[in-house]
Figure 1 (cartoon, rainbow, N blue to C red):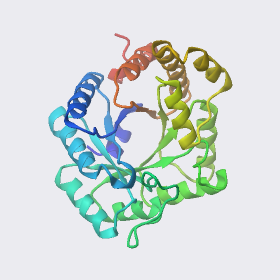
Figure 2: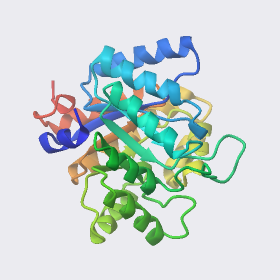
Figure 3: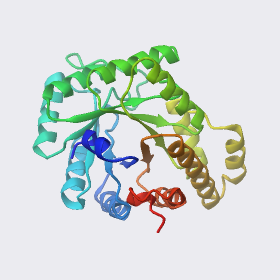
Figure 4: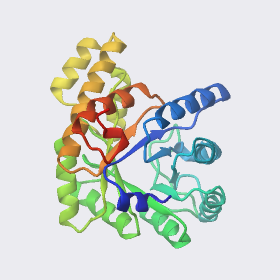
Length: 299
């Protein structure tokens, strides 16, 4: 089912994001995680695309396997990096052949070892160009990425928001945000987006913290800021991964509760291929008593 149809039928929507495993043992472990989270009845899951298109085959195989074997709606990430326009069209054909109806259209990050994005000589330079190609195919629902604290390469918030508008105007049905740890960034982002005519749902992306060193690296890479009080608490507990995980769950649960209470259309969880934190956060949210969504039923 296309996510655009889910949006029309149901609110809030919940989704989980995974990355393709590197080997067979990791693949088996990931499928166990997927099946574990299946019990929570997510509306869809997504699978990332490695830098430089390095996991193309694994991404295609995993989204197809999740949809076929686990019976969850799956969305494939697709990037411009390293692909010609002809290759992109071939990938779209393969996704369609495998029954995949949903795509997240991204420019993508530079390949490992490179610091700047270099488009394929016969490829797409920007995500809005990829979005336009997906729209021309006429077979998919697609979403695009938004950046509450600005894309790290954008010169200003205003320029970044205009870039988002171009992607949405190309035909995107929704926006999924980069991770953030302060909800005011999300609410400001949505307000500014609405002011320039971006009307599609904007799903907040939440990453539960499980490792302080790791989250510092992620935050730096994507330009997300960690609140000083949270940072101090994590620093004090950083040698105790269990304590860090508890702090991360508590903070993310509080974020999600406020986001949903103030009108967010759902939550997209960056799971890092783990199920525990996402499951515990959703347990915290059951107190919202929304009988219309299985994830929020107070059972």
